[in-house]
Amino acid sequence: MTTTRIDRRRLMQAAALAALAGGGPAARAGQPATPTTVLDSGTQGQTRGAGGELRLLQWQAPTSLSLHTASGTKDHLAASIVSEPLMSYLPDGSLLPRLVTEVPSVENGLLASTFDEVTYHLLPDVTWSDGEPFTAADVVFTYDWLMDPGNAATSVGQYTAIREIAAVDAHTVRIRFAQPRAGWYVPFTGTNWGVVYPKHILDGGGQDALGAFSQRPVGTGPYVVDEFAPGDHVIYVPNERYREPEKPFFARVYLKGGGDAVSAARAVLQTGDFDLAWNLQVEPRILDELAGAGKGRVEVAPGANLERLQLNFSDPHTEVDGQRAHLGTPHPFFTDRRVRQAFALSIDKQLIADELFLAGEAPAANFLVGIPAFDSPNTTWAYDPKRANQLLDEAGWGWGDGHRIKDGVQLKVTYAAPVNQVRQKTQAIIKAAWEDIGVRVELAQVDPGIFFDGSAGNDQNMSHFYYDVEMWSSGSDIPYPLTYMQGWYSGDDNVPQASNGWTGLNQQRYVNPEYDALWEDAAAETDPDRLAELFIAMNDLVVEDLAGIPLIQRAAQVYGIANRLNGQNIVPSSFEQLYWNIANWNLAQG
Image 1 (spheres, one colour):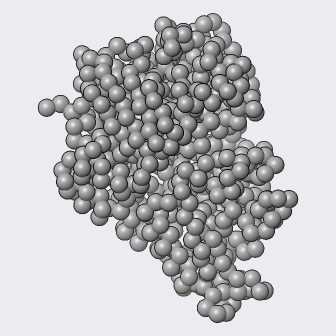
Image 2 (tube, one colour; image 1 turned 120 degrees about the vertical axis):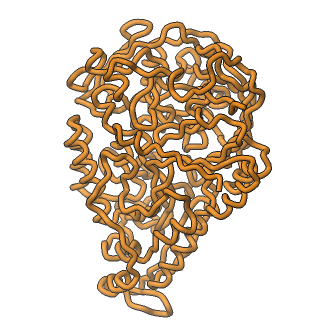
Image 3 (cartoon, one colour; image 1 turned 90 degrees about the vertical axis):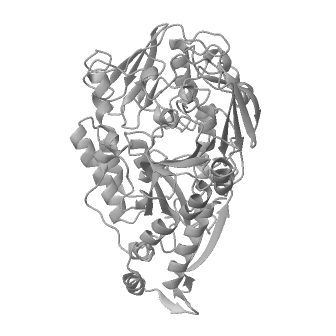
């Protein structure tokens, strides 16, 4: 089979915590990396726009190109071709300067030894794609814009630790934090949350300006939008003002959205109609067949993503004050740990991994995966349906009419997942397992564009959680996983409810004061060893308490790539969007 497993684990071992001390090994050695030295094979001496058309297939179509208000990966991907952060993450978690001259460190004097202040020197002579200068005022404006509730920024949580931000001069930004901050680099880093917005476009323009920007963003990146049909396609052309004169190589990027993962794989591997297809969550046997055509290959990069089951700790079937899954209304049976444990023990994770996932995508015992510094050695998983039945017996769930009943309540769940062939087959395996222990299971399959859409009026999305169980994949998209672990934190109005516009990361409505205290301690900790202890303790607590069910540790990226592309320059990472360094992409030699 032409499937390649990209072994970046040895890179990951180098330092999930390296950035604490100032940007990773390169920066600490006084030799900060630059975009032109990182996996950009064969770009020297090339001509901008000489490469013809690059065709990307993204089976979840983008609907907005405003990254800070995007509701999911589909939009972040498309926006990352235009918009840029101050720094990016390399696959090992270390930092790469993008719009700054160097990575701040204690050694170069730009990072305070107390980790509560950082200074950035911006690259000189960078312009926005419309010709306006890029300055420190844009960075400060971006922070102010994000903190304005009227803009409903989905990335605001990454910036709340900032106490003060100031433009020292046109090319110097100083940020001060409310307390010492291990993740001092998180604001303005990475294509997931860190891009800078143009002050001259959005300042004072309100929702009209944002609406226009979400369709035709102005950025500093290698491409500009030539045409956008939301839900269908985006066409990009080179940014003629891009700061590296030999880049980008392709004269046109056609990003087509829609379809499904199997058809996306076919279009690259078998028919050759496209050059790259994102997120091929497809059965291995099907990928084997398609790759046999010899027109492309599948790349698999290990990562920090987890396919998991979210268990609802609130009742999604009882309406309170006009909403279901109200925080004050406990779930009728998931509040009993024995029931949660029975659901977990009945699932054969190894069967799911062997049948439906690729090499390197293995059964998971932990929620926090793929960051070696925080991998817990303390947990295990088990498949034991006999014990699952015993637990339900002990919890008082007797049998009646082929299913379990207690006090007139059926042990019945609605189990939702986004539409995807692998997920639907996973649902079928798990449904059969649960029915074997006496659970009635009703499956719900939701279009991904609806499931991952955060709109307040969308009662089928993951945040409303109007189901008993949801299945989806997530992981820490930065090497400092505080925000990811916030998914079990119940403080600071972090549980999505109608009262807060369905914002917040704790979708499963899990409340545990012990966990909250650990998370708050981690938020204030800067010692790497102690921080690792806290993250592992948080993971172990939610694993032991069955606050959800880890299923499979997924790859950072699984994508199909045409043989004509130079795969060395495509740098998959758990911490960046797949297109993050598209400025360096070009054709294979020979």
